[in-house]
Image (cartoon, rainbow, N blue to C red; front, side, top):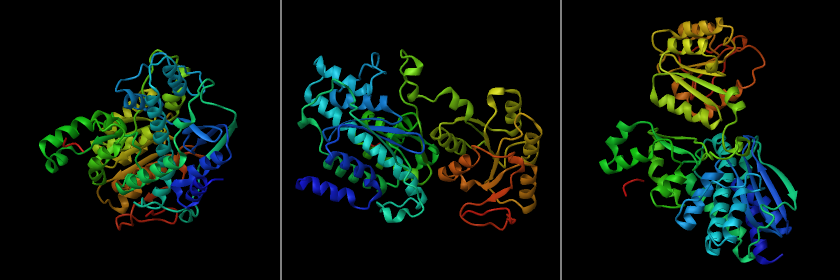
Amino acid sequence: MNQEDLEMQNRSEQRLTCNRIFRHLIFYHLQKFTGKIKVSSTHGEEWSFYFLLGNLTWASGGSYPLRRWRRQFYAATGKLPNLDNLDWNAESWDCTELRILSENNSLAIEQVQTILKGTLREVLFDVVQAFEAPIYQYLGCPQTVISLSQLTGIGDGMNLEVQEGVTPDRYYRLPRSLFPNIKGLQERTYENWKKWLKLGLSQVSPNEAPFLLEPEELKKRVSQKVYQNMEKGLQGKTSLRDLAFKFKKNSDFFTIASAVAPYYQEGLITFNPIKDLSVYNAEKQKYSTFTLSEKNKEESFLFVIDSSRKNQSLLSAIAQRQGSQFQAMNDGIDALQKMVYNPFARPKIIFASYEMGIIKPQEFCAIIRRVELIRSVPIVVYTKRPISNQDAEEVLYAGANELITENSLTPSYVNSIIKKYQHPKSDPKNQSKQTIIQGGTSSHFRLTPNQTSFSMFAS
């Protein structure tokens, strides 16, 4: 083992959580491994890393492979790629396409190397962010790197599957000099993750799209030119990575992130998950990994009743990140009519504002519990103002499963509620009621023994 390998191994053994993926990669690098390492998370995302005699030759997977390919191709060539003839049956369609373009001289060797390095860097950052986000959420979202000693009681969540001899493309051959150094990849990923944390974005993926929640408030804070650019760019449709290319920053999405991060911290901006690019001429089963399956759409449906555009956008973003369909209504009566008479609008969980229009939340819950087709749907009621003990008890007695404050509508807490009711073991109406208050107990809520209290653009 040479000095460079020893330095890499020592760095990988530093007890920093963001080094977890590199401990695995460096191990197989030192073993001169040839094959595929598939990494999967508990949320279902998968990435694959390919080795040839210990050299990291390619990486694929994640939720946005087509967007990634388009970005990396554009970064190398200044042109958009043709997506019409991609080989979906290949082990790694993007690597196969890279090889074909190289063989027919559509790409120079320097462009091939640019795409290779850019792809590896992007996938590695995505893997680190995906596995670090739940840890940082658990620890209160610190803005510095954390060590394994702080993981007491937290599962790793990183599953590995090793397949010897598998290559991304059977004809894929590149000079060894083109393969990036794993140590260099590790250093760059580590530095990028530190910058990401400093911006307070541990819970945000650069593949998500910033969305302007409070345009009028933002207009007061920035110049007219900056506001116009932000209003145009922050529509919840274009990811940070794609925005970087749109604003001619190429792969430097940190410039865009630095511009929006302060407003994200203040709640003026949120981040929405988006879908990967569509490939219209491919058979559905050959690109089903790029879109939600019909089965998932039918089985997961979040319904929100709230006239607040901000709350609707927040809950919509959370639902999309969970792979759920989303429906929002401003009024409780309209929502009831839609759920009762439309068989395709029967939700798996309901989030309802206490201030839901003409109908009272007690009446709304009682009606839901009387309608056979939707009586078992969990109901979470949230309120932006204090209510009396009697009103709280009436809502819970009428059939609400949870009664929380509007301040509790954070991604982490809403996700925990959704997971709690994904596979109910009994009728939610008969489950013990809970009044949950985020950040402390209020005198306006009385907790019974069965209830629980939980605490860019100027250019």
